[in-house]
Structures are given as C-alpha cells and as structure tokens.
Amino acid sequence: MSTTLERPEGAAADWTIDQGWDAYTPEEHQTWLTLYDRQASVLPGRAADAFIHGLEALDLRGQGIPDFRRISERLQKLTGWSVVAVPGLVPDDVFFDHLANRRFPAGNFIRAASQLDYLQEPDVFHDVYGHVPMLTDPVFADYMAAYGQGGLRAMGSGQLHQLARLYWYTVEFGLMNTAGGLRIYGAGIVSSRAESIFALEDPSPNRLGFDLERVMRTLYRIDDFQQVYFVINSLDQLLADTLQDFGPLYARLKAAPDLPVDAILPTDRVITRGTQAYAHGKQQAAE
Ligand code: HBI
Ligand code: FE
Image 1 (cartoon, rainbow, N blue to C red):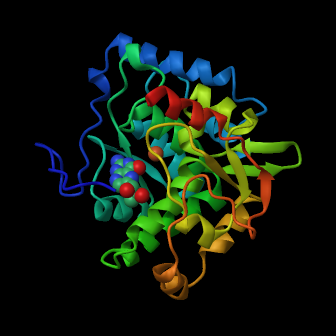
Image 2: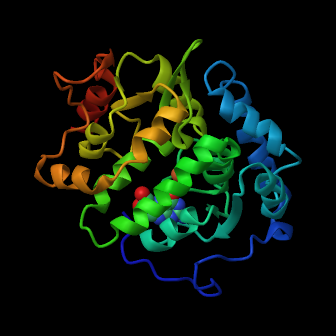
C-alpha cells in the first residue's frame, strides 16, 4: 500500500497533472513502440479477447505514447471512462476516488530503454497499455468502478490490505478460463513479455479457481513473478462475485489468518499444482 506520499509540486488536489504529451522525446515514443511490438509478438493466443479488442478500439500503437485526451474521447463513448495523468503512485483514497468516478490514473513517464523488462513503479506503458484496454469492456469497466466505490467504503476499516489483494489477483495478475484455454487479462502480466509466457505456460506457479474470500486472504509479492494466479470463468462472474455486501465478508476475514503465496488448501479448485521451481531457484540464488 502507498506510504505517506508527498503531493508533488504542480499536482492538483486529486494529484492529476498535465500529461505533457508535447514534451515526450522521439526516444520515449520509440520505447513505447518497442514495448508495444514486443507484446504484439507474444499476446495473440495468450491475452483475453477483451484486451485485444480494447487495443484495437483505442488504436493504442499509434506513432508512440498516446495522448490521454485522444484515448479518453474514445473511451468515454465506450464505457464512460477517461485516463488522467498522475506523477506516479497516489494515496489510496485518491486512487479509489478516481476509480469510483471512472477516471483511470496513469503515470505519464515511461521507463528507460535500458530497463525494458521490469520496473517497480507503474509507468505509462504499464498503466495505459496494461490497464486501459480492458476498460473498453463494459463489464470490466463496471467492475473497476465498483472496486473504487468499495475502496472508498473500506477506508478506515483497517482491512484495506485485504481489498488490495483482490485488485492484485484480478486487475493486475488475473487469468481467465475460455473455450480456447487460459487467457490473461491482468495488466501486470499483459504488459510484461516474460510473465505473459510464465503465467500461462510455466509449471512453476499454482493456478487456482478464483474465490473472493480466498483471494482476499492470500499474500502477494511485488518483486518477482507471482507464485499463484487465480482464474475466473468470466468477467461477468467476477463482477457478480463482488457486487455483494462486503460487511459479513470483512467480518469473516478479520478472524481468518493470511495465506502464504504458495499455499494450496483442500478447498481450492486446483487447475495447476505448481512445482514452485522458479521461486525456489531464485531463493537458492539469493542465499
Ligand atoms: N496509484 N497511480 C496509482 N496506481 C495504482 O495502481 C495504485 C495507486 N495507489 C494505490 C494502489 N494502486 C494500491 O494500493 C491499490 O490497491 C489501492
Ligand atoms: Fe497496475
């Protein structure tokens, strides 16, 4: 969760800034195109149809980093969402308020050409390429707005970390069952070439059927590939599962211990019982 972030110079009360589209350099636009084309070579057959359709509907390759004003015009017509520029991570209450009002806060900076593969802070490629295409799907668009509203209600409950896990294991790292097999819809996966392959094909991670309470108990890692991915049957099911009164759920969660990232419970719907070889290999290397 965000620590006490300082609102940067020039940012509005809701932490939005001007995207500064005219200031992007040719190298920055090229970085966008390089990343876009790398994903175009791995995502067909791996990304969910809703994501692919969103990419096309918004014409996200263009000539480089998109102008948020142009994306917002198209997105507004499709699902009422718009993209607003922020300097980076924003405080939880600010973040939830944007989502609840169908504004997606996207970083306006792009990673250096020397660090194409991974970065901790969400840049414009993670936020706009990874998150925005799914917002063209009406059901997912409703889910994200509902998540924001739920977040605002949960503020001060002391259980925000459990709601953040729901975001993490769906919006960031979610997989979906389809007639054609498992597909990616999570932004953190779909914006990473290596994890797009790892999440679907590597025998190392667990892949478990999505269960709301189970997900909200499960710890997650922010520094490496996930050790577990949760699989929904459809976006409709995801939305339906979260349109319930969270009151009783939070009460049960208060008493329930957190679950380690590699746990498998007898009640889990196991799609892949992972070897965890990747994570164990990284641990040995670190020791
Ligand atoms: N801020 N810009 C930005 N993007 C995020 O994804 C984000 C954030 N602030 C908080 C946050 N995510 C998570 O802690 C949410 O689960 C609340
Ligand atoms: Fe993200």
